[in-house]
Amino acid sequence: MTSNENVYYVKRISGRKYLRKKWCYLIEWEDYAPEENTWEEESCLMGNTELVEEFERQLIKEFPTNPNLVHTHDRIVLSGAFDPESSISESPEPLMVLPLTSKTNSKTNNKRQATDNHKKGSPRKSSRKTVSPELEYDVPEKLKDNWNIIKCGRSKEEIRRFLSELDNSVILAKDHTHKLIRTSATHSHFEGISPRVEVVNTVDGDPFPTDFVYIDGMIFGEGVSPPDPLFLAQCDCDNKLCSGLCHENETLVYSQDGLIKALPGTPIYECNENCECSETCQNRVVQRGRQVPLQIYKTKAKGWGVKALEDIPKGVFVEEYLGEVIKDTAGDFRGKFYDKAGTTYLFDMDFGDYVQYVIDSFMLGNASHFFNHSCSPNLTVYAVYSDSGDVNFHRLAFFSNRLIKKGEEITIDYEGKNKGDTDIPIPQGSPGKATFRCHCSSPNCRKYIHN
Image (cartoon, rainbow, N blue to C red):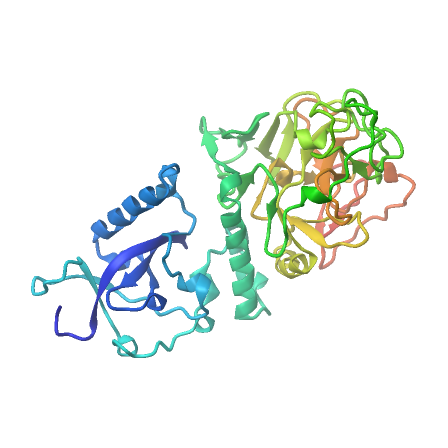
């Protein structure tokens, strides 16, 4: 040990994360309590790769069945390690890690130079409240251009909460994500997704949104528990071949071919895991998943959109709206930021007694994330109950309301109007603070869409 009391030694690296396009490491300091662990940027290691290699070896040892964790950009911490960002409200100022001089006998290969406030035994004065939230969490790419406007009028704590919630949603989804595999300069597809979902850009050189995470199932956010099958009632059919008049369905909601028969605005009650019928039951459609291939493509005037890769007959289930399920209060909070960005991916579960849950597809979702608006949409949304006994929790499923030709764009109405709502007069929109111009080119175009 050196006699310089301003120098401290690294015990080991016990965590890693990718922040603001830089690798950061969770450092455990020699002769310091775990509560003194700090996150430091890779540059502070000054080329001392041995500690990083030892961390990766320990990571593989703890997770032998998942070697890809070595390459993950998610925050990952070794078991038993203390992470100050998730455990306490204070975060020490980053300090430089320097290589040891030849005068020390320490077995470690690193040391850091401490400031007066970080001398051994001195209390730590800094607080996360004094640190800019943007230095702790990445601002999503799609918000960066207007970030100063978006965050205007919001406190640091509100900004920190917003960014941390988005960061956490990606972490929660890590076991349900699918990589984008590039096959040519213009074509890609999502790995492990069937039927296939392609990504094509033949319009310009813009890359596919790097922040978007493709998921294969619903993600349940803070305070939202996954549905409990114990509360599901099984159908009362006399045999294992359900008639379709199950549960609370007053009429047949599906044909023998699985096409939607229910009128728009009618809730659908599918059979569930407690029912004795098979997976091929006529009353199980949405839960079997999408059966048509889709293409996410770059449009000339509307950003990214989705098109059909084959003819889709009328009444076919096309896609479910997936994302992070959050409480309605959390949706209201995030909506304040999304509204200023001029975009939102919040979809209320609004068929129950009241809105209790919201699906947020801003950071993660499936092809439905890229459905563009049309004042004459070719999809209609239905509330589908299949895995929850909670009247306020239902799935959001999109069905074709007419024949959709191969190569045709797939669209929905952002204002929630369905094709069956023709008896409701729809006024022409007008420009304003909460509107954006419509580019659907439909004969019934309302010109402006309320956000």
